[in-house]
Image (cartoon, rainbow, N blue to C red; front, side, top):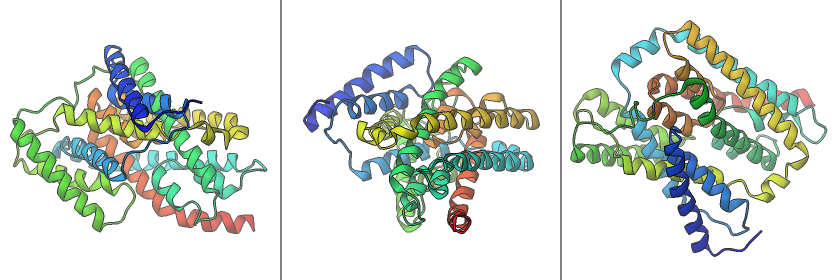
Length: 349
């Protein structure tokens, strides 16, 4: 481990992000900047003990910008398609939740992990929300935090591999391409959606509110047609994606991995199993609905909401469909969290 000054650490993260973004873009990886930020964050966290953390407000802005990207891509016809497929969407969403609960239950069979900790460590959806309430619900918040973000990390690392090999999407054929409304309207969309949306997030205390508030405002503007085909400027998107990727990467210090070293092989095996099982449910979703295979796969991944949505937008998948399924699962998981804690504690007693 090396000691770096905060300035040197920041320079490393920025430099690796730029270099990796170029390389991943040339390799036709969707959302290359996000994954480059992830690599850069890990490059520092795993090689130095120097803490590096951006202000929390900056990450809220980054999350809000991604919300604007997704909200501006929503369309009326896409919402109608979702309405015609509510039953298969609901069944697949339920299957994904059950897969993650079963994986957490298996982790809880270890003598050094309680069932409450095991379930909350691997439950898919709302990692930040689950981590925030883990201790209050009787779980080991250290294990929950590391395993939750390890799950997110593995999902993030497999997304470009699976999408590139199995589906071979054309980068940029989705909503990350600039719109035709002009720079003034594009910036108006960003500023209005971000400011109003983040103000709403302060009023409505809810996990991922920093994403959902701006998303809701941008979606309202998109459906109204007031700003035409306005989109978030590409340079602004790069900034947001790089920050989100770096945020996840910086969590993986050597100390955090050492804290779960003994259970690491089991956790990785369970996470890979979850990804494979949810991919199978995605295949069923593609069979039961008019959506394509890539959209169905991204809609059912067990976590990595920001990366999933940005990949969907950049690769031509149906971003509205992906967001609807992921959001519904997130809401179900957060609603069930207190009930699960109570049930698991009663079962333990």
